[in-house]
Image (cartoon, rainbow, N blue to C red):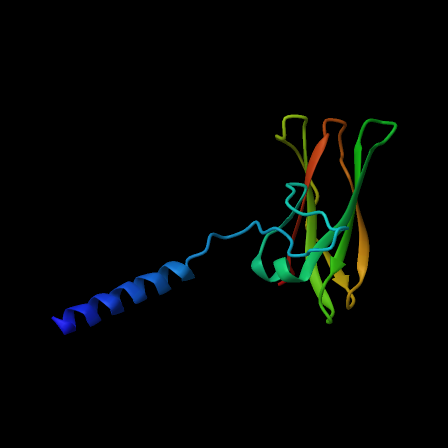
Length: 139
């Protein structure tokens, strides 16, 4: 009887351990608690877990240019005490949030220790009204 309890306990412990290891892949929200950080937004997403603890967005500016195109500037911050290289792109969307087919290619961004860099994106057509800026660790 005692062996059955030990066996059940070990099985329950193993099941709990394995369930805790399963995580859904990104996108990840930035981990930052400062009041100047853009959090819980679909406008800035992190595509992998290493970027989640290292990168955050401290501000987004957007404006419509005279020709109707959307221009976006993201202030991307390195939260680490080491130099980081990430890749960043922007997917432009229409009013309903559907991609307009206008997506910038990923570009490399090198951030010094605790630095913030402004990264600018401009849509190629005048259909864009929403956007998502995506960041991932450079490989």
